[in-house]
Length: 176
Image (cartoon, rainbow, N blue to C red; front, side):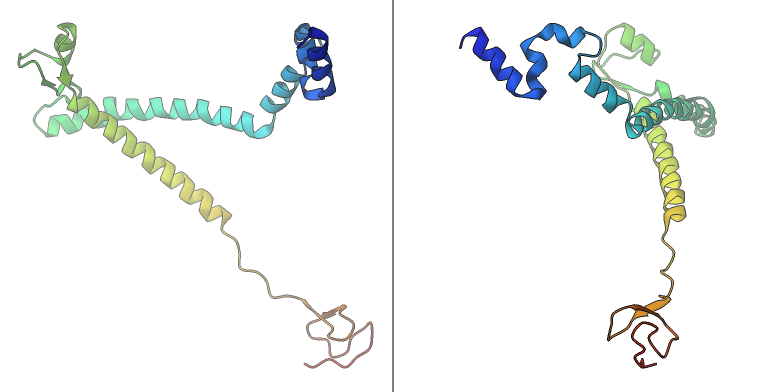
């Protein structure tokens, strides 16, 4: 296909017009792709999502610190001075002083103590999210619909007060 035909093809479709001359992508005001991306990125829900991700990451670090530094040490002390982060099984059959020593030696290990820490982390985060969603749902619960204040006249179909005995539009007698 000759170059001129390609250029005409791109010019017929406004969404592809910038492809005929790629240098237009980088020209100020002439970048439809970048303009669309900017519009997409600046929509409210994308910004809300970004804020949520940042807050979620910070919350995750707080929970991790809570589990590793506050919750697990006393629990390990109660269970006989056990350091959960140092519980592992060496798959090579050799014994090592600590998980760090096993890793430094390049030994394959099953780190079940770290797994327990992560399991507790997950449980706490899941509980916190459950409580948050529960509160949001409690606030969002729909109130029961109020009884209607009007009804339709069976003759002229205009709105009539519930307690009315006569239609104000067509003056028809209404059944109570």
